[in-house]
Length: 205
Image 1 (cartoon, one colour):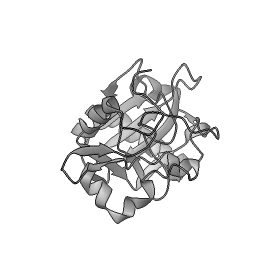
Image 2 (cartoon, one colour; image 1 turned 180 degrees about the vertical axis):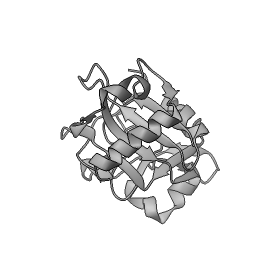
Image 3 (cartoon, helix red, strand yellow; image 1 turned 135 degrees about the vertical axis):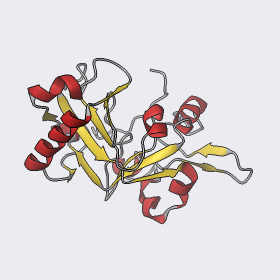
Image 4 (cartoon, one colour; image 1 turned 45 degrees about the vertical axis):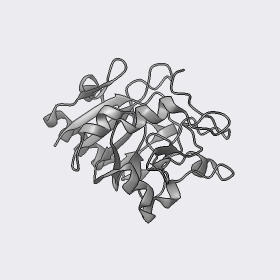
């Protein structure tokens, strides 16, 4: 069992996508997605820029791992395909990659597309380099109500900059015990950037 932690720089409800029965990580964080397996844990913490340093945005236990095409074709995740004239939850759907009739990868109109809905090749290439979509039925998502990580866990649980790091197993298990003793699994609030206006990410800024 492995434990990874990183800073959630943009909490739109896209990466991770915490809606419905499943919390999914399908885009961004390609190195984490490429290397983690069922049973591993991912922790996302707040950023100093968002005045959320030392706070937990989410924790997810990987209960499934599948390819992008498997994710696209699985009827359980139909609701995570973006609907651009729908609600914000639907617009931020992360089920956006699949092969076209010529067996080439394509990107649906989404948070990771250009403003006109066309394919953003930078995001496509980076996202697909992660190889897998990580799925969780056992997760804690706090979003805009991010919780304070107890001080005795912060050094291990928090990253000082970009990228991710491994969390010591003994400390991670103690933290998870504390988390489960104090909070119920599931989504506790909307994402912090769920402000009523849909935004796109160009992959650069």
